[in-house]
Length: 191
Image (cartoon, rainbow, N blue to C red; front, side):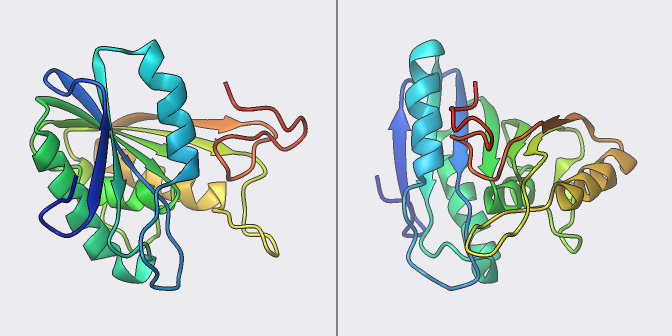
Protein backbone atom coordinates (compact mmCIF):
# COMPACT_ATOMS: atom_id res chain seq x y z
CA UNK A 1 0.00 0.00 0.00
CA UNK A 2 1.36 3.43 -0.95
CA UNK A 3 1.36 6.05 1.82
CA UNK A 4 0.74 9.77 1.39
CA UNK A 5 4.50 10.43 1.64
CA UNK A 6 5.37 7.98 -1.13
CA UNK A 7 6.59 5.34 1.33
CA UNK A 8 5.07 1.87 1.30
CA UNK A 9 3.22 -0.10 3.96
CA UNK A 10 2.70 -3.85 4.24
CA UNK A 11 0.18 -5.10 6.81
CA UNK A 12 -0.17 -8.60 8.27
CA UNK A 13 -3.17 -9.34 10.49
CA UNK A 14 -5.99 -7.17 11.87
CA UNK A 15 -5.29 -3.63 13.07
CA UNK A 16 -8.67 -2.71 14.57
CA UNK A 17 -7.53 -3.31 18.16
CA UNK A 18 -3.76 -3.07 18.38
CA UNK A 19 -0.91 -2.79 15.93
CA UNK A 20 2.85 -3.04 15.85
CA UNK A 21 4.38 -0.56 13.42
CA UNK A 22 7.80 -1.89 12.34
CA UNK A 23 10.42 0.59 11.13
CA UNK A 24 13.73 -0.30 9.56
CA UNK A 25 17.32 0.78 9.88
CA UNK A 26 19.23 2.97 7.47
CA UNK A 27 22.65 4.11 6.39
CA UNK A 28 24.62 7.23 5.53
CA UNK A 29 24.08 7.00 1.76
CA UNK A 30 20.73 8.31 0.55
CA UNK A 31 19.36 5.20 -1.14
CA UNK A 32 15.87 4.05 -2.02
CA UNK A 33 14.09 2.28 0.82
CA UNK A 34 13.92 -1.49 0.98
CA UNK A 35 11.94 -3.96 3.04
CA UNK A 36 13.90 -5.05 6.11
CA UNK A 37 14.95 -8.71 6.16
CA UNK A 38 15.19 -8.56 9.97
CA UNK A 39 11.68 -7.14 10.36
CA UNK A 40 10.25 -9.59 7.81
CA UNK A 41 11.79 -12.42 9.84
CA UNK A 42 10.26 -11.07 13.05
CA UNK A 43 6.80 -10.56 11.55
CA UNK A 44 6.79 -14.08 10.07
CA UNK A 45 7.56 -15.48 13.53
CA UNK A 46 5.35 -13.19 15.65
CA UNK A 47 2.17 -12.82 13.57
CA UNK A 48 1.10 -16.49 13.99
CA UNK A 49 1.80 -16.31 17.75
CA UNK A 50 -0.25 -13.11 18.18
CA UNK A 51 -3.16 -13.37 15.71
CA UNK A 52 -5.10 -10.52 17.35
CA UNK A 53 -2.29 -8.05 16.57
CA UNK A 54 -1.69 -6.33 13.28
CA UNK A 55 1.90 -5.93 12.10
CA UNK A 56 2.66 -3.08 9.70
CA UNK A 57 6.07 -2.85 8.03
CA UNK A 58 7.23 0.49 6.62
CA UNK A 59 9.40 0.83 3.53
CA UNK A 60 10.88 4.35 3.61
CA UNK A 61 11.17 6.51 0.52
CA UNK A 62 14.86 7.01 1.31
CA UNK A 63 16.53 4.94 4.04
CA UNK A 64 19.24 7.22 5.32
CA UNK A 65 19.92 8.94 8.59
CA UNK A 66 20.70 12.00 6.47
CA UNK A 67 16.96 11.99 5.69
CA UNK A 68 15.85 11.06 9.22
CA UNK A 69 12.98 13.58 9.13
CA UNK A 70 11.66 11.95 5.94
CA UNK A 71 11.81 8.53 7.62
CA UNK A 72 9.92 9.95 10.62
CA UNK A 73 7.30 11.42 8.24
CA UNK A 74 6.96 7.99 6.58
CA UNK A 75 6.43 6.30 9.96
CA UNK A 76 3.89 8.95 11.01
CA UNK A 77 1.99 8.35 7.77
CA UNK A 78 1.97 4.61 8.53
CA UNK A 79 0.66 5.18 12.07
CA UNK A 80 -2.15 7.35 10.69
CA UNK A 81 -2.97 4.90 7.89
CA UNK A 82 -3.16 1.93 10.25
CA UNK A 83 -5.15 4.03 12.76
CA UNK A 84 -5.05 1.41 15.50
CA UNK A 85 -6.31 2.63 18.88
CA UNK A 86 -3.26 1.04 20.54
CA UNK A 87 0.15 1.11 18.84
CA UNK A 88 3.59 -0.23 19.64
CA UNK A 89 6.45 1.17 17.55
CA UNK A 90 9.12 -1.45 16.89
CA UNK A 91 12.31 0.19 15.63
CA UNK A 92 15.33 -1.75 14.44
CA UNK A 93 18.66 0.15 14.34
CA UNK A 94 17.92 3.61 12.84
CA UNK A 95 14.27 2.66 13.28
CA UNK A 96 14.81 3.30 17.00
CA UNK A 97 15.42 7.00 16.29
CA UNK A 98 12.49 7.04 13.85
CA UNK A 99 10.20 5.47 16.46
CA UNK A 100 11.24 7.96 19.12
CA UNK A 101 10.73 10.81 16.65
CA UNK A 102 7.07 9.90 16.10
CA UNK A 103 6.22 8.47 19.54
CA UNK A 104 3.93 11.41 20.34
CA UNK A 105 1.43 10.34 17.65
CA UNK A 106 -2.06 9.48 18.98
CA UNK A 107 -2.46 5.83 19.94
CA UNK A 108 1.26 5.18 20.43
CA UNK A 109 1.80 3.64 23.86
CA UNK A 110 5.28 2.19 23.68
CA UNK A 111 8.53 2.10 21.72
CA UNK A 112 10.53 -1.11 21.48
CA UNK A 113 14.05 -0.53 20.18
CA UNK A 114 15.95 -3.50 18.79
CA UNK A 115 19.63 -2.50 18.72
CA UNK A 116 18.35 1.06 18.37
CA UNK A 117 20.37 3.99 17.12
CA UNK A 118 19.59 6.81 19.57
CA UNK A 119 22.04 9.58 18.69
CA UNK A 120 22.92 12.08 21.40
CA UNK A 121 21.39 14.94 19.38
CA UNK A 122 17.98 13.19 19.08
CA UNK A 123 15.29 14.67 21.30
CA UNK A 124 13.63 12.11 23.54
CA UNK A 125 10.77 14.49 24.38
CA UNK A 126 8.26 12.60 22.15
CA UNK A 127 8.56 9.70 24.61
CA UNK A 128 6.96 11.63 27.49
CA UNK A 129 4.04 9.59 28.81
CA UNK A 130 5.12 6.48 26.85
CA UNK A 131 7.19 3.40 27.66
CA UNK A 132 10.61 2.65 26.16
CA UNK A 133 12.06 -0.85 26.04
CA UNK A 134 15.47 -1.52 24.55
CA UNK A 135 17.03 -4.85 23.58
CA UNK A 136 20.68 -4.59 22.56
CA UNK A 137 23.36 -7.16 21.84
CA UNK A 138 26.46 -7.12 24.01
CA UNK A 139 28.73 -7.55 20.94
CA UNK A 140 26.95 -4.95 18.78
CA UNK A 141 29.22 -2.20 17.45
CA UNK A 142 30.47 -0.86 14.15
CA UNK A 143 33.03 -3.32 12.80
CA UNK A 144 34.87 -3.27 9.45
CA UNK A 145 32.33 -4.38 6.86
CA UNK A 146 29.70 -5.12 9.50
CA UNK A 147 27.09 -2.50 10.41
CA UNK A 148 26.31 -1.98 14.04
CA UNK A 149 25.27 0.37 16.82
CA UNK A 150 27.11 0.59 20.10
CA UNK A 151 25.06 -0.51 23.09
CA UNK A 152 26.66 2.40 24.98
CA UNK A 153 24.96 4.82 22.56
CA UNK A 154 21.50 3.29 23.03
CA UNK A 155 22.07 3.18 26.79
CA UNK A 156 22.82 6.94 26.84
CA UNK A 157 19.60 7.59 24.91
CA UNK A 158 17.65 5.33 27.26
CA UNK A 159 19.12 7.11 30.28
CA UNK A 160 18.19 10.52 28.81
CA UNK A 161 14.61 9.28 28.41
CA UNK A 162 14.51 7.98 31.98
CA UNK A 163 15.82 11.36 33.20
CA UNK A 164 12.65 13.03 31.84
CA UNK A 165 10.38 10.48 33.51
CA UNK A 166 9.94 7.87 30.76
CA UNK A 167 9.23 4.38 32.12
CA UNK A 168 11.08 1.48 30.58
CA UNK A 169 13.54 -1.40 30.60
CA UNK A 170 16.96 -1.83 29.06
CA UNK A 171 18.10 -5.39 28.33
CA UNK A 172 21.50 -6.53 27.07
CA UNK A 173 21.49 -9.85 25.19
CA UNK A 174 24.77 -11.65 25.87
CA UNK A 175 26.67 -12.66 22.73
CA UNK A 176 24.30 -10.94 20.30
CA UNK A 177 25.40 -8.77 17.37
CA UNK A 178 23.45 -6.10 15.49
CA UNK A 179 21.33 -8.39 13.34
CA UNK A 180 18.03 -9.41 14.87
CA UNK A 181 18.02 -12.92 13.47
CA UNK A 182 21.39 -14.34 14.57
CA UNK A 183 23.40 -14.81 17.72
CA UNK A 184 27.15 -14.33 17.44
CA UNK A 185 28.45 -17.55 19.03
CA UNK A 186 25.89 -20.09 17.95
CA UNK A 187 24.53 -18.68 14.70
CA UNK A 188 21.05 -19.58 15.99
CA UNK A 189 18.03 -17.26 15.73
CA UNK A 190 17.25 -15.16 18.78
CA UNK A 191 14.21 -16.48 20.64
